[in-house]
Image (cartoon, rainbow, N blue to C red; front, side):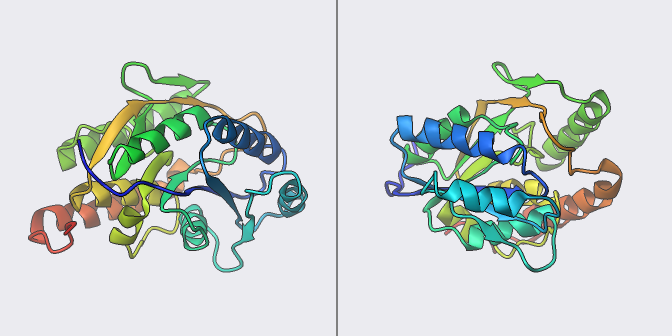
Length: 250
């Protein structure tokens, strides 16, 4: 079992663009679960250029949930940029990235926290191992997902079969050890875990669930992301096989 310092604060990073309908339930569920589990936490929601009432909803919710820390990304927008902005504005020695649409389970996020406290550097979830579940996953996106994850798993020779899912948790040392981040969009979802694995951080994998959003529309556009995912994977693949371990955990 890995050994590492005990953790003191869990930062939940949530990028949000036009999520005024989803956020109240998402935040309520996280606070309720973490409070019941006695997890010291902060919830850093990044308003990534919303054009609806997302920021108003966040400022209103802040009076109800003191652990909510909303911030605005006033620079260039994009999923990856919003996540990095949230990481830069968080204080926790452990972080978990969750979606604003309530597709990720706070119960599993709490499980990640316990695993990190056991000494792991990273806690990864998979929707596609025994015990995992997906509910109302669009068929075309599911096919593309499974194909992409198969290619990543073979190319990097790793057991993780759900690399593209953003819902993962890390010790702060992992985040700092994987900088600088290059991916400005959803390709950050593969950059962080692949860098963490290639650079020698310890990890474990558990089954998780995923449920399709109730409100709004999905932000991931497959046609726009294919080449961007390929670029990030190729960049880290070159690091894995040609960098001679220059960036590995010391």
